[in-house]
Image 1 (tube, protein in one colour):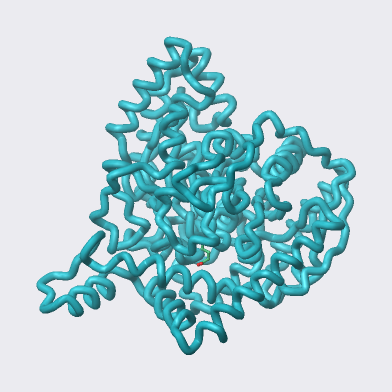
Image 2: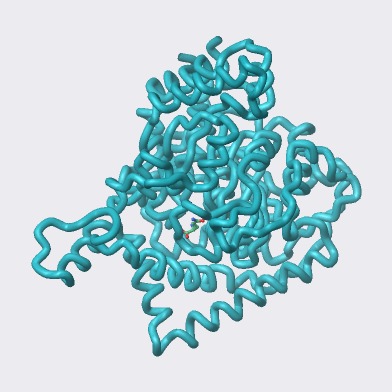
Length: 492
Ligand code: GLN
């Protein structure tokens, strides 16, 4: 079969269960596509072909003996921020170019236990800091819709592999938009779960109070399958919440779009820099949801102007603390011929980290330093609470809140935005992480250059089922999520 990569996850599981194809055939098909196509997309940092085929053979045994789980034999790609035992985990950094983890992240362990086949590790902005994937030590990943554009970031590799059909599903992480924005730029569905829903154990830390892993796929249904595998309490992550996990697949039709109250923040649609095509596509998608029975209700999110400054203080502060462990002694890169311990620290860190990571460490260290702590860090924490309260107030009147995922479509590679221009592009995603809420991106059309546009739906705490269900029903009534980039249409 030449078109196994066109199957949805449900169709893949059915094909495997009824022996229409084996996991080895499916895995080999993806490995062949990677070999033929990824030279142009550059999404994989590491392809684990040999291990993948061994996992596929083991999956085929389980399938034959009738003891397979739901996703047994389905391939997956992991963002290179999730530790994988025995396989390099780089976080897109020279600092960890030689790092081989002695253990698996819980998310990876769960996908392995479920019988998923790991195709490899995919590219990302260095330590997940960025919005284009260009800050990776391994170079820029290309957007499958237009190879001259970025796939977004920081989970740009995860988005690109799915959009080019080089993996059917992928894991991503989202600290300030890194699942939703690349999903938006690549025409995919991506879910950022409630803080505490997915274990952070073994997920290389950027800003620990904001980081959350989640699924990236073509549809809400595909995301639901992966959420069923990776969500849940983990005693190894103290911020993981011990709360029953929904059956996200079974609940795909459980939320009625009819009667659903969708909040439209009036501050969001007048943001300077909101592209006219993005605005139009998002409004059309909201009209469609209205036609399906939802009601649009204007809401006030007064703190909108505070999102970017608050996030860009708290995230670097936490990053400067988290990244202090990379000192050239215990992990990763060590400079050549250090003259003394200070020289070792200094040169290992200035040679091992790229410019954006160094910028964040400097900002974060400054904000946390004794004389400035109250003026910056403590103040940002207070504003963070106000942002959260703003959302809780809005949720008294509405079920979900709608917004674009990003003000623009994918940037050109090398556009060389200034840091502040780049940070402003995160306006629609940051508050969700500051408040710890779940949110989803769904593809809703294209701009004049045939680049995808995404709608973001933000839910109240623990509403992942509801968000997946709304998007699933939207996708039953539209076909944006079925559109494929030309490179994904190439058969091999
Ligand atoms: N673009 C944001 C940043 O650079 C968000 C990144 C993320 O979610 N990991 O920090």
